Figure 1: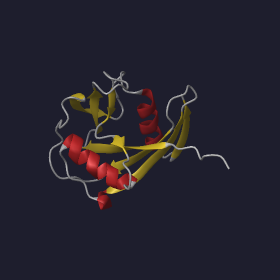
Figure 2: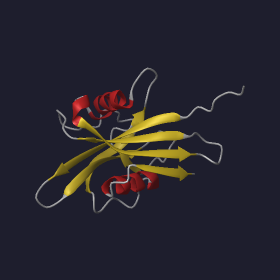
Figure 3: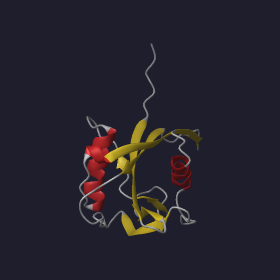
Figure 4: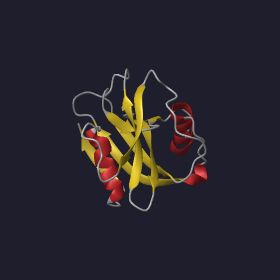
Length: 151
């Protein structure tokens, strides 16, 4: 019997703030990570560690990267993207959750990996956002719970 294929999991907390005019999403600009540096990404994103659920990873990453406290009950599932590498890279399950509430003020906690933290209108995402993140946010807004990406 052959070995089972192993895929990685990553989480993406969709942190929103809404007022009477618009809804904004919190993004960070990547630096020194080796992946899409210089582009905007979902703030607080990261890998799911061993012996950790996806929701536990959201709580840990939000604390480590943004300095905010999130409770599991304040997360709601938004989207799952199965990202398959056809060029020899890694295959991922990207799991997106909406953070419905949190305590603290989002701050750059890992200055070596993030050059900027900024709120963007959902209807006007930056042109230099990572393409697959933009697609996932758009799928969430359209209530599409699952997608597949080959890259």
